[in-house]
Image 1 (cartoon, rainbow, N blue to C red):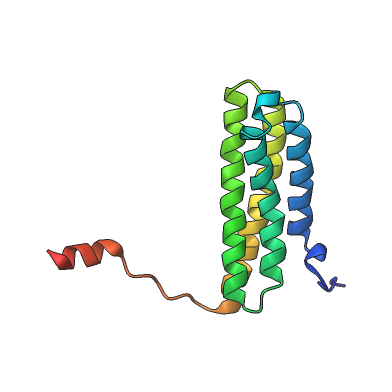
Image 2 (cartoon, rainbow, N blue to C red):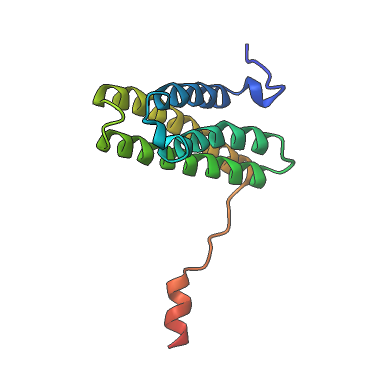
Length: 140
């Protein structure tokens, strides 16, 4: 029996995003004090953006808007992944902490990708954008 989705809170992808937010906040607690408004703050904002965009997209009227917000969540996830790597390079996180966080990031990334595909299928085929290089070659 399939569970009916009544709210964005019922979405496993949103729940995983919320879990990742908690994980990032725990990881950044040990960062140096001078990073509170630097890298730690950026990582927290990127993490918070992920479930926030999923929730906002889910409440939108049209699949294309939902798709757009899921795409923004994916972009924030990529941003967070980069910031995690930076934190390791600066010595703020251990490789073990990085690997644990990256496992959560990759799992959530797969869920976001699946949601995007489902939304694409629901909305129908999207028209391809014109290739900007074609326009440039036509101007010559």
